[in-house]
Image 1 (cartoon, helix red, strand yellow):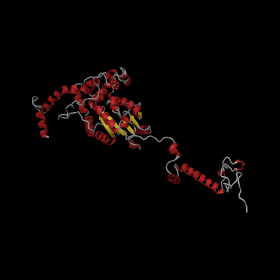
Image 2: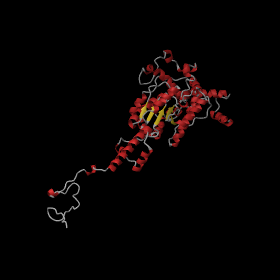
Image 3: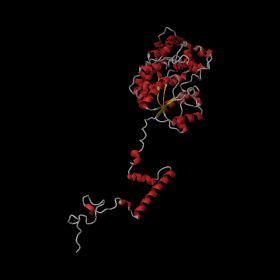
Length: 438
C-alpha cells in the first residue's frame, strides 16, 4: 500500500491535488511548486472561434452603419437589451443645453417706434442671459424679392439658437419657404406722431451728434431738408402723401405687392398676421407695460428688462435718440394727415385694443380713458397714457397735444356748421341727438 506524501515538517500533505495557483504560501521553503502566472492566455480552438465570430459581427455592423446612414436594427436591439447607458453616455461630451421655448424670435421693428431704445436693451440682455442677438447692417430695405426673402430666411434659420433677430423688414412668411415659423414681436405708435418724428429725424437727426442727419441723408438737397412741414402736407408732396404715409401696416401685412397699397386688403391681412404670428404687438406710449409683458412671455430673453430700462444710466443713453428740431404743424395740416392715414389709424386702434385686452388678462390696468363720441373727421384725442419715459423725452413727445387742444374748438365749429346748428348750442345735446338717430 502506497504511503501518503508528507511535507518536510511532517504530517499529511495539505494540498493533495496540487499547489494552488500562484504557488504555495510563503514559509514553505523549496518544497512549493511553481505554475504559470498567466494561465488565461491558454484557450482552446473553440474559444478562438468564438472571439473571431464576435469580431466579425461588429465589423459587419459598422459596415451597415456607414452604408445606411445609421446603426442596423439588430445593434439597436442589442443596445436596448444590454441597457441604454454606454461609455460615451457617461464619459463623452456633455449633452446639448435645453433650448428655451420659443428659441427663435424675430423683432421686425417698425421705424421710429422706439426700436433703438429696445435694441439698446437687447444688447444688454443678450450678454446677461446668453442668447444670440442677430442684427443686420441693412436698415432701409424692407421690401424684398423672392430670392432675397429665401436668402434672409436661410441666414436667420441657421443662426445659433436661442436667437433673437432684429431688422427693419416687412413680415416674412418662413413656412412658405419650408422653414420653421419663428415667434414675432413688435411695437407701434400713434401714426401721426411716428410720421412727424421720422420727417424731422431724416433732416436733423437726434442728440447723438449734430452731423448725424448729414450721414443718414447726404444726398438730400438743402431746399428739401428745410422744407416746411405745412407746405409738404398742404401741397401734397410725395413724402407727405400716400403711399409714403402707408407705413406701419406693411410691416405686418408682409411682402405681397398689395401690402403696400393703402386699402382694406392690406389692413385685414395685417390684422390676421397679428393674430396668428405675433406673440405681442405693443404700444410705444405704454412702453413700460410692453416690457413687463415681454418679460412674462419671454423670460429667457427679457428677464429683468424693466429694471434695466428704469436705470438712470440707461435713461441717459435713451435721451440721445430723441429727434431734434421738431416744429409744430398747423391744425389744418394735422387734420389732412389724419384723413390720409385712416387705414393706419384703424390698424393702430385695433392693435391698441388687443394690447389692452392682454393687459387686463394679466391684471395690468390701462390708464387710458375712452375717447368721447365724435365725428370721423375729428382729430383723434391726445394719448392720455402716462408715457414711461423721462421728463425730457416727455416734453418732446407731448408736442402734438397742444395742436389737439387748439384745434378742438375749430373742429367743433366746423362740425356744427356742417349740421347747420348754432355754435352756442350745447355739445352734449348735439351728441345725444346724433346717438338717438343711430
